Image (cartoon, rainbow, N blue to C red; front, side, top):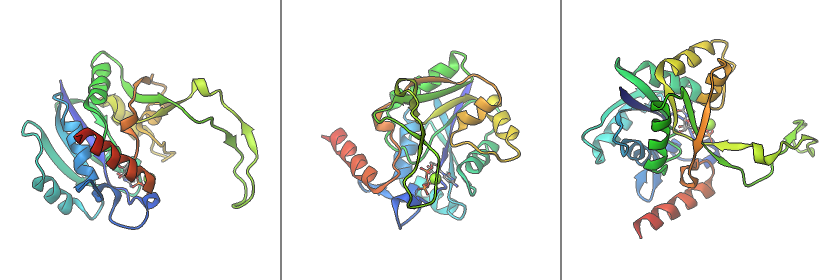
Length: 236
Ligand code: CTP
Ligand code: MG
């Protein structure tokens, strides 16, 4: 049994503001993508990491990985990504060699995920789950709205019971064949905001394991401040 990680890193990072593609932006001096690759390669179970680079940035990403210290026991591949996250993940899956039977999909934008979270996901897949998602309870109450005209107050439709909701993270772990089937089934391009969502649509079970606060997604400028504070705390 061989486990590979696909790291979609092809996004522009519009919400982070102007600058380089998000995955290439520095966190305490090191590109976010390098942190993310190291976080997944830190798991002894992960023997291959496929990085899905910005569509015109594969050469730059290859250079970046060559210039940073990475574990020798891990193989690395770089492929160009697509216009959406889902397309980028699909392009990463297409690059997996035979023999890989467990696949993790991990956002480059979650550079600080602890290795224990990665190992927990892998273990649950090894124990027989076909789709595993790290998740945490919500701090905020969530409202469902009827989206209206921009600038107008939005009417509330419902308030789902918070105790039954979870915020999901990555790495999400899958039996390879199930994940490939889930991506291929979405030919109409209905889309999903995470990979497990595609598996749910197949009617296959998806299970949650505990996520971690440090697996948060760097999305907006304040998240960079938090990420650098976490790194400083680790180094202290
Ligand atoms: N991603 C990707 N290909 C895309 C879009 C996103 O590989 N076409 C990746 C991002 O690089 C990121 C992950 O998917 O690692 C999660 O996406 P998100 O946090 O939304 O990143 P961006 O799409 O880059 O950010 P934004 O939505 O603010 O532009
Ligand atoms: Mg995005």
